[in-house]
Image 1 (cartoon, one colour):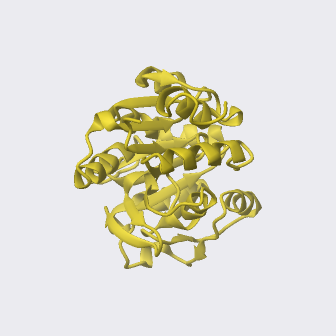
Image 2 (cartoon, helix red, strand yellow):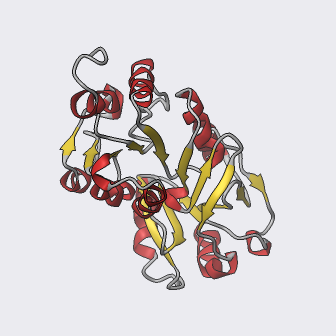
Image 3 (cartoon, rainbow, N blue to C red):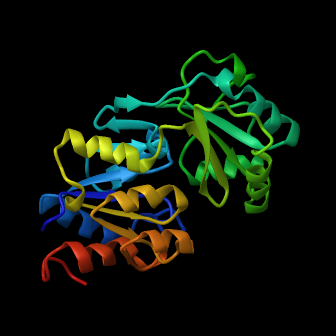
Length: 271
């Protein structure tokens, strides 16, 4: 097996629409791990709800979280690197969210906080296995943040993306559509691809020895960086166009199929 790193997005890629990773996919990833590949989850999630996914695979190791804003290692978790900023840099955006009734949360490298959580938001957090801490005013926080996330319907997030052209964001941050229902704001230096590039440089692993699998716009630079970039069938067209190959959807064990077809030697695992 030529691939030493398997970089995997989580939601819409590794997990199906029921937020589960199937036994078949677990078995395939463990086979790849035992054959010498490092499994690196690269996700928009924070460590609190990304680490349980790695544990479901029966593995420990390094995770790229918050779309590349924080890299952590388990067990621990131990924070290896973060791109932080002060919440006051996003004061105008916070005021916009409050005025327009757009739900938002803020994230440190290891924790999440929200000013209020309604029924719709509570259901979302439950699905994603995370429970944000409560603060009355996020603008009073003094610890560095790595991400602000806005959440709503697809139509609401479309409107947020249009409105961001009129909201004053400092040049040090950028907004990224990380899912149909999410828009993230992070340091301009942050992306999954950049975090993966920095990580494998430390491990002295070349891009041609990396396979990356993802399904959304925030996965594109990771897919392009890897020697073999694979998009899920449930990806938007722009993601598929950026990839070297397209596998089955997240509801059809697409990660298993991709590794069976492109990574693991023939006969090393069941179809």
